[in-house]
Length: 495
Image (cartoon, rainbow, N blue to C red):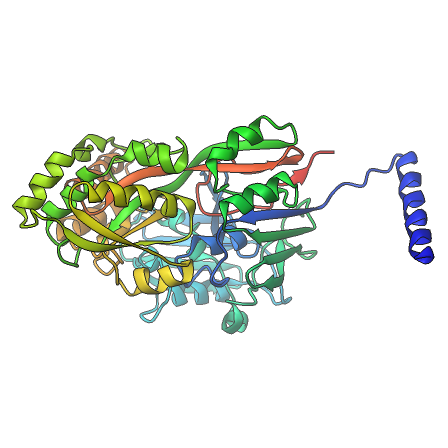
């Protein structure tokens, strides 16, 4: 014990001497809490947004990338040229970029990544992003040429998604548990059920970030989240799961509360191929049984914007269609009777862990019961949801927030988990993809929003708000979430 006291005294003296000398010991690590733990760490083979939340931009990078304001900027591509007909993109890559294992990143890696994503046996959750690519050619080690079958006004946007990051064939076998990218942070440790640790990459090709280490902690329970934040055991809680506690944090000078928007359309997703939801009258009845504002108020304590279609209200092309499916229990009952379900029916309601789903699900189940629909609540962990609902399509109803940016194109994919198959909508999306004129694109996006709203594909609930809590000294955090990410590149501690 005496030896320990002596060492403590020496350490205190050393610290005191440093402070007297005016040397600032800036804090260079951060502990970030998240509600969901990733199922694995490969963003190119799963739909879980928790993967991107940890690795997007930090570990893995793409040709382009999203910034906090939603803009698309160069990533691994230093610049690009587009052919006059809009079908050939020639990307010039940054020189001197290496993967975390020390190997060079070059055009061959870009070709491998894009070819892998668009391959017939690809496990990429957003394979449609790459469907228009007909060829990826290597011009030289720092130049890659991507040829499209037809012009695509969204191509640079698509390349910024986490699903489009550049990976190397040498490290692909272990990517799920040992991710090797080109980013400013290297993967250090993963303690399942507890944390993932990233450390600053000393050989990063770009500007060095201020933080030397970032620890992502996983706290699923809202009560535990509040306790951890109040005890200052964590520095930031991204997307804080207990919005009822935000006023308490706002009143505490130790903390800052950041409220912004996300790309997360939160929906009561409906299995369009499963009876009775294959009947539009039943889907419409479900839509009219829902009181969106009651869900926002009851589950999210007012944080969230009601929506009537799958599109973000902050987007300039948004069309307010909430009146198409206003809360009207009597109309819902009449529609059910017309469809042959005057006495209602039973179904399942799968709820993944996020608070918006678990809390919102209880409210929605009660609202559905009022019109005769008995929804059996089945709470599932995220991995179970991905396996049984997303992949297996074994569900009646579920609640999930689609956080991918401007992803209305998923409704053109009949095989997608809610199984909406409308050739007219698919043709509309094909036209949109080949349209570059901004005004024409806005018109087409309006038509797309209206079509899925009129088909009552899903129950459109609300746009998820971004509600983050952080210690007062943390700076450089994203207020809004243009994609699922916790970008460490601009974060530092105020001196």
